[in-house]
Image (cartoon, rainbow over all chains, first blue to last red):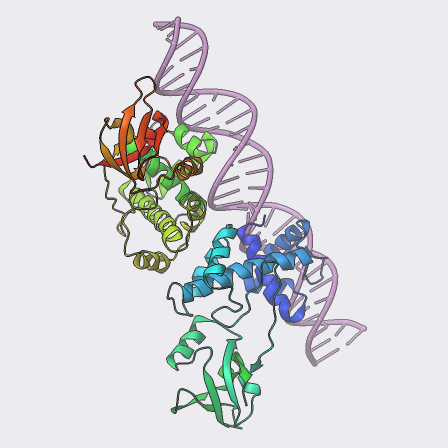
Length: 219
Length: 219
DNA sequence: CAATTTTGTTAGATAGATCTAACAAATTAC
DNA sequence: GTAATTTGTTAGATCTATCTAACAAAATTG
């Protein structure tokens, strides 16, 4: 059984590997906020447990069992976030910190019960998929709002970044998942978009924001 | 801030001190399932943090701040147990293990929300009082069933022991808190009691069981 | 391609929580 | 009240997760 620390390394590896497949020691050190020597020794240790493949001066890759272990921790994290929002009334900007701790609890019944109470949700409050009990993840490929064209109508479906600050920004603009947006115009100078939703008042969203919003195109 | 390990020592000290006020190193070692030297060094460490008073070869006592810290951990444990039973449908025999882990989560909002959702319960699922946010405990002095007399009617109010085995025994006899029992007879030979509840079928309870059942006398 | 920068490794130290072995104090028993 | 037992302490070791300093390999850059 993985220690809490090991679980956190697995999770970081999983998240970093999502794009690249391979993860550098320095990347992982930065993500985990520890020194490179610390990562070096931890990676050797994870290798002994069969969770990663690693050779000197080479990037780290998760083994199949490492991927599954990571996905199951992420499952607990995302189920917890969803439970906190849906069943306990927390805002989507409040749940990450709590889930970060709850995800390390070893009690399958506890998470199964959350899952059941919520009717087996597929997505967490930020639109990220919840891995199933086998650690499989159903990847959904949304478009970033920044890739859309003037005149398109889209539904806000997920976020590429769920930092508290970003979530609070979205709250301040009354933007939440499921909201229907229409793209009024795009400023060619800075790629900012003018959109409307909830009836009328139009809102300008910077390119940075648009890149972090994942949408489904309606028309 | 106390580590998880320190929190567990504080909790054990609190529970052991409840009767005696003072706690021996050997008692604490047994409770924590570690060796005496381990306790010795941890107690010195807790002393440096101001949670206990300790002198060589003397028993350990919690300071006021140690008592408060312990009570607040116990608050989180008991709120969690109650939440698991009342809001998540767990049986009273299933919740201890989970609460043992959840109690170490640092997230006041999380426990406040549980508390609020349950309408600020005063007792946990085993009838033990839930300390308030200041760490104060409202002690209720129930009687053990074994102290009662033939003919008395009582309400099952709490347990002195909440081991899984005992809880499963009570489940098998359909005994739960709030149940009204009438004492039909007491066997002078072994102090076992014959009681009725739920209408008719009478049940014999050994002295050991009767000592672990706390009741309120009705008549 | 040689020099510089970045990335990664090794060695050795530290802090927390644990252990065993050896010894010392306190308590119990006769 | 001495002997035996129990209880408690000290010393020293181990394991995990971390660090810094020093060095080595790889990548980048002019």
